[in-house]
Length: 124
Image 1: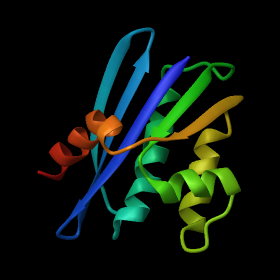
Image 2: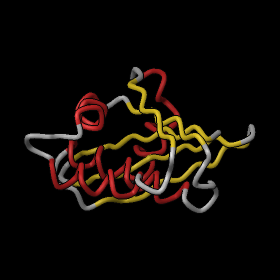
Image 3: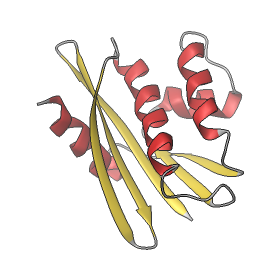
Image 4: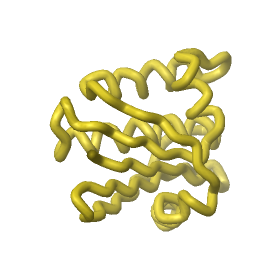
């Protein structure tokens, strides 16, 4: 079982991703600059980047519990549709496809503090 927490930060036209991966009690923290032009697109990109990173340590039959504080990412994944971000959703779903079990969870900003702090650090 792997827990994946992702978050994005957007300020002054710059965007970044924070990724926190928990596997077997070990934490892996990563942060990346992004090229997204708004916060919602950055949230999708952060999630996709997170799944790209866990491909390095996960097995295809391993359960992935995905945590996001982004309502639009969570709702879009649940519906397999996004009115304004379909391209970003399609890319995210492609990164998820290799995993046989992915369970998305929407959490509060407070519960996603680790990924949030990493995203903020990547902005600077």
